[in-house]
Image (cartoon, rainbow, N blue to C red; front, side, top):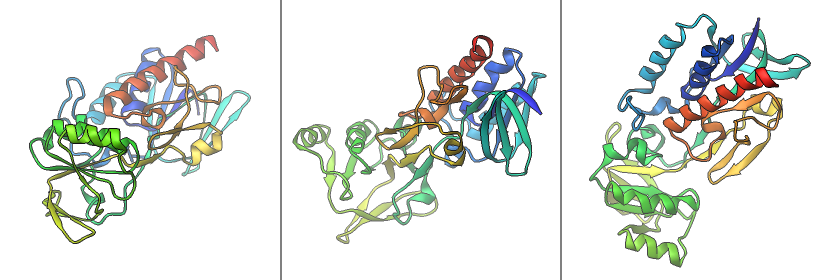
Length: 298
């Protein structure tokens, strides 16, 4: 089957791109594996007019609206590979379905890698969070911790006191320099050099953390910038160039979201050094508009 544009990934960025294209009366196929990066989050916050809606609710509403357009098609499935040919791109799913398109938009998100601390991953998206603007308000006025994963963690630690009393756990990963230490002290951030070895609590709740020297410190929320990676089999097969960001590799794009491979666009978290739901939506809009214009002007 032939389409003007195929979008791989059907979360906030991919569906936003699709909306621009179907409103431009282009035939669009979205192939979605049902594994959005935000699937662990209880709710999406800070999204204009949609504050507090679950990611599932937002996607459901988006699909209801997209299905009003006759040129929109959705397929559930996993894209195994894709390649460029003389007429555009050939996309092959794990089920063996073959689709063709003139332009390709990647919206496959990022892979998050959390530190291997017992009790951490099962609370990810609930009381262990990345973006304070997305989830910090729900943890307000509680004792909070920031878990160091990179030099950027100091920046995060200096921000989190806006929401609650903060402890910065260096984890043997990063030690603040004198200037950073002064900033953290000014922000009344406690610095803890004994690494967290266990997150304690019932269910999603956190009551404390145990550190390596045996102490138990009362905490009710943790903020962490996980290591990220946009590399996947599809990105590799297509030869899209990556570039480093503070927390890991992302897909390199220009101002119109086009990758190093002409005709391929990358939108959402996978091509953004800063990520949240609204940024992903805006990125999808830009990529969708850019793909549409490239169909017209080349």
